[in-house]
Amino acid sequence: MINRRTLFVALMAALLLPLLPISIAEAAPLRLAFLGVRIQNDNEGLEPTTDAERKRMAAIGKQFTDALATSGDYKIVPLTDDIRAEIARGQSVGHCGGCEADYGKTLKADRVAWIMVQKVSNLILNMNVYIADVATDKYTFIKSVDIRGNTDESWSRSLKYLLDNYFFERKS
Image (cartoon, rainbow, N blue to C red; front, top):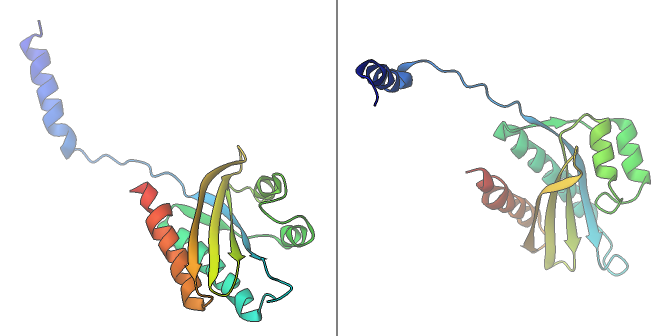
């Protein structure tokens, strides 16, 4: 049987606890190295990748890193010139047997991310976002969305949709 004093102390603690200023240490943002945007053009011979598409790749890369940095959950780790050169001359990111995690380790990142846009035609494209844990070399996020139309707006809206409805939604 609980004595009165123990019961009184427990009740007072329960009543006063919400009034105490408790500071909960926030987790530090994850360090994320963004390895870039690649395009897989299924009809390169008939419809070569255009300068406009290259600009869209740069634009969605910036949109992606800005969105993650603004969330407060990620600190974007800049790529060094050496890593950029290694990516450019090596196998394609996403098809290199774990080079992504190696790049992340070199950059002291917690996560690595990249985007792949597959162009079937000017009407049918698809955007894939990949995020992997550097320590385990396991994917923590993979999602794909279809893009209808090959315009600046369609690419931007597709990435925004993917982030808002799948990536950030998972955290809610």
